[in-house]
Image (cartoon, rainbow, N blue to C red; front, top):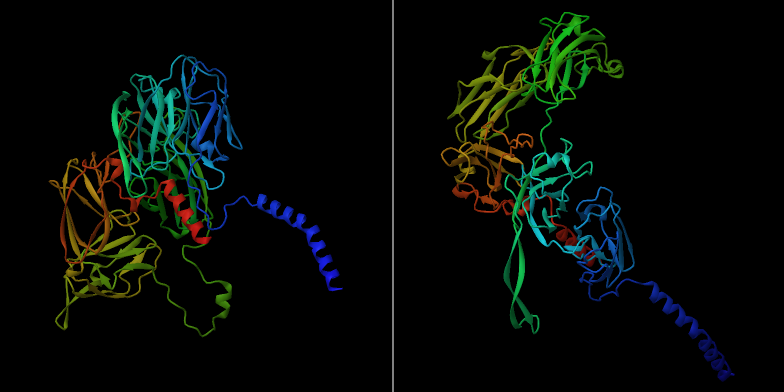
Amino acid sequence: MLELKNHKRKKLLRRAFPIIALVAVLYSCASIGRPEGGPIDEAPPKFIGSTPGSKALNYTKKKIVLQFDEFIKLEKASEKVVVSPPQIQQPEIKTNGKRIQLELLDTLKENTTYSIDFSDAIVDNNEGNPLGNFAFTFSTGAQIDTMEVSGTVLDAFNLEPIKGILVGLHLNLADSAFTKLPFDRVARTDSRGRFNIRGIAPGKYRIYALQDADQNFAYTQKSEVLAFNEELVVPSMDQRIRMDTSFVDSLSYDTIYERKYTHYLPDDLILRAFKEPSYSQYLVKNERLTPQKLTLYFSAPADTLPILKGLNFDEKGAFVIEKSQFNDTIHYWVKDSLLYKKDTLTMSLAYLYTDTLGQLVPRTDTLNLVAKQKTLYKEESKKEKKKKKKDDVEVTRFLPVNVHAPSSMDVYDYISLAFEEPVAYLDSTAIHLKQKVDTLWKEVSFDFEQDAVNLKQFNLFYNWESGGEYELTVDSTAFCGLYGLWTDKIKKSIKVRNEDEYFTLHFNVQGAEPTAFIELLDAQDKVVRQRRVVNGTADFYFLNPGKYAARLVDDTNGNGVWDPGSYEERRQPEKVYYFPHILEYKALWDATQQWDVNATPADKQKPNELKKQKPDEDKKKKNKNRQNNNR
């Protein structure tokens, strides 16, 4: 009986075995990922052939097929793949297994070298390893143009590498070619801001960079970022020798070979890109958020204020005018309560307007301004009023003021009082500053003045003593706002930091303009302090210990800010330089840094810690490491 059961069990297993084997085969076919614990595929795809052949001559068909040794895919083809000469109609690009099919839609030019630059768009299907710097070339004529030029495009303001911007050459040397004709040869920058324009014929060229918004390969919109070089580009080449090594194993080499290769020049072009400021003058918007204030916003700076005339009120002496530094934002504070209580203020506004020919012409608009809110300050709601008891004392409303008087005061800082409305009256004798001397408080004199830019702010300046203790008091009713509110009493205690908590930094500068200034930056590339370079030196006192970077601006017009360029005026943006290292100092240090602004190439000046545009390969390494750690 037992033998019969064993016989049946064996018979059943023999019948089931083919089914189990088939399921196992199907499962292994469905699992295309690499086995757990196996080596990671880090090899990029290999180009093994094409139709037509690489560097084919007299090829006039529009269809191209590229063959690779493994399954591939294209990443961001519309951004990375560039055909030169540029194509007005974007080519059709498809991937199919191990092949790429590309069809050009524009008419091919005679006797022209065509290069299709894939950059790092071609990656293998499994691990995404890129076939970097891959380009395919053919010619519709009897020869291939082989010259190349390369370089880097940087943001002119902060030397940040610009990714994906178009770089083009014009054989036509006229300035108008950039604004009217498409480029002769083009390329795009990679994630490092690097470009390499291939297939160039011998000759003299002008080179440009362009953030081509309308994709016409010409600078036709003022909103487009651009760069241009004054010097002509003359492609050339020379023969160089590089050393190649064959290894026996990972630790020892067998032979060192000398190999000749062709090197193309120039290979270090620097293009500083910028956007031209908009000088088109027009009224962007007008608003009356509260009954007491009207605001006008203009698109560009202006030399004069607009002329406002009331149509349902008398505008003479009706306003306190608060304007921005360049007259592009203007606030009109209404003085008279009878006027600001009007539901609608109707007025005519005369100002200069940029017409379709780019000329400033007079224009007059009629404005009807209705307040969006009922009052300048928030009033109690009906609920809050109901909650109040009849015998509750009415709370006095004071003029709001924001006091900047930190309890731990920097030795270079100052006190400020910022109001939410213009001040109609102030009593400077009601402001007191006392210094603690031994155990007694001694009143000291100080400078008190209205801010040069913000008319609603007042500043108190004093030469603070290191480690000193001070007390600021402002009597009640010291200030009265435009709408009748008075300030409450203010009292602030201040302790000035000791000088031994800071360090001092000096820059001795070479190669900069006499009007240059230096900006000290934090780790986020934001300005901490700014100083003029005087006789080749810029001094920064009372700095908090920590890490800093530095940027120098060749302020050629001496206005204290960086200015972009102008293509029409053939004016380059003001040059910017970065100190090539992060600086870190401790308290009590007195450090001096020598800085030759031309010693380091512009594309290598900005420290990597400050760059926001990181190389794509670094991002991919991080992603791979993250994936490997999760496995």
